Image 1 (cartoon, helix red, strand yellow):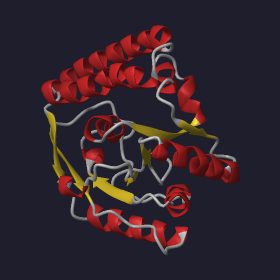
Image 2 (cartoon, rainbow, N blue to C red):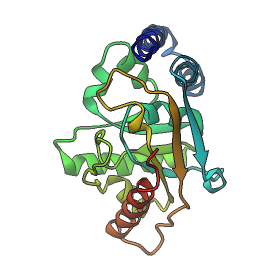
Image 3 (cartoon, one colour):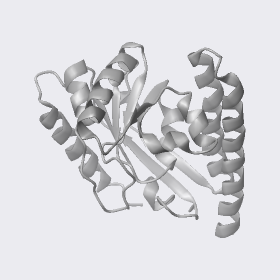
Amino acid sequence: MLVLRSLLFGIGMWGATFVAGMLSLFIWVFPYERRYAILNFWATFIIWWAKTICRLDYQVEGMENVPSSPVIVLSKHQSAWETIFYQVLFPRQVWVLKKELQWLPFFGWALALMRPIVIDRSKKRSSRTQIVEQGTQALKDGHWVVIFPEGTRVPVGEKGRYGIGGALLAQQSGFPILPVAHNAGYFWKRRGFLKHPGTIHVKIGHLIDPKGKSAKEINALSEAWIEETMKTLTP
C-alpha cells in the first residue's frame, strides 16, 4: 500500500505540475498578484493530495510568532515538502533559488513567474549581492523572503554549512529573521520515492531582531535555534 499510495501521489503531483507549467505559458501577461494567486493553487493541491493519498499530515507550533509584516524566513531544508508547504503557510513570498531550477520543464516555467531571486551558487560574492539587493526590494514591496541557508536538502540527522546570505539580508535591510525547523525528512526523503504516513511537525521560533548585530551573529543565532530545535523533532 505504501508503494501504491506513493505512486498515486506522484502521478497527481506531476500532473498538477504539468498543468501549472502549461498555465504559465498563458498567464505571464497577468499582473504579478494574479499570477501568484493562480499558481499558488498548485501548492495547496499538493499538500492536500499528500494528506489525502499518503496520509501525510502536519502540525505547526509557534504561529503566534508569525508577524503580519514581511520577514526573512530561514528554514531547515530536508525535503521538497517544506518548499511547497511554506507557500501555503506564509503570506505572499519570494524564494532564493539556484539558477538550475528555472530551466526544469513545466515546474521551472511556473517558478519563473513568481519573481524568485535566482543565484549562481558558484559565484558567492555576486550571489550575496543579489540576495541583499533583490531581497530588500521584495521586502519593501510587501513580500516575504524564504531562504534555506544550507543551500540544499540535507539528510535527516545531518547539518549543512549555513550560508550567510539570509543573515546579511537581515543585517543590511533591517528586516527580522523568522527561524523555522521541521522533521519532513523522516516522511518525505530528499531523494526518496516513498512518502511515509505520519505527522510532520513544524516549529516556528521567535523573531530575531538584526538591530545592532553583525551578519555572523545573526547567522549564528538562527543556526543555533534551528539545530537545537531539530533535536526535539524526532518522530
